Image 1 (cartoon, one colour):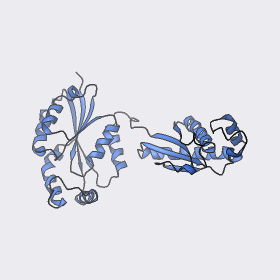
Image 2 (tube, one colour):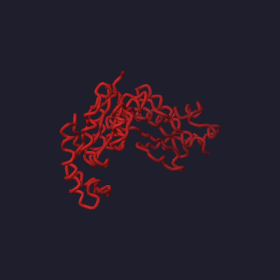
Image 3 (cartoon, helix red, strand yellow):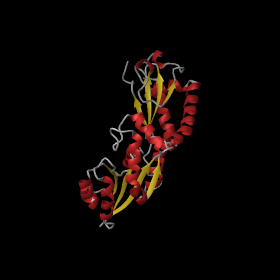
Image 4 (cartoon, one colour):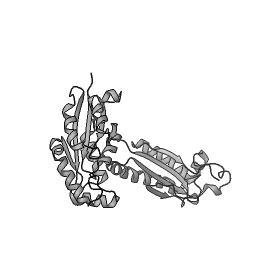
Length: 289
């Protein structure tokens, strides 16, 4: 009989449990958030019975569940270690940080719906102190950004180095006259290259066609921009990856989005792939006239 790896995530309201849960989901954990305690008891008794084929599970539970502080320690004591390998992860943050976070979100504290947030925080700390004492790991998110929280979760809970979710790199060609693509992270303008649109026989073709590419390659600036953009991206991409970016969109624009930007993206895609950075190509405006 295989043993399920289960991370039980709890802690103070506003300390970042939802962010941490998303990180576990990105790592391939089956993630469950805030089950009622009777259902949580059934689930913890044998998680793999409820989630077949999955042996890595993350469960978020907190004071939103009635009777949580008193009941959760009992649930932990009832877990059969032969079936479930449990790690208790406790999240906390400084009082002033929690007060600021509640102020920014304008949500009431679950233990102080009609009182100052500070009272709810104080009461929650008292209730959860026994659980904090039992925790296998405590994360203090007071000074952490979302990216630093992700780094910490990946460092502690990824089974193998390199298991962290890979960054999806997109190269998007577009025409400025149709607007800049939403969600663009890096934007490059190649309208200074001579436009094949005005060359007889090339207007109806695109940057994917050999004749257009041959025309552009005869311009000294074309090979130079491919080399410079490749060097820049090879320099930047590992740094974006270190920040645990899930997606990075690089947009290259020309006037109409059919010739120059398409050709540049096609060439960049090949150069980056050779350097270990595969990208997906999106030619947004290639079919427009």
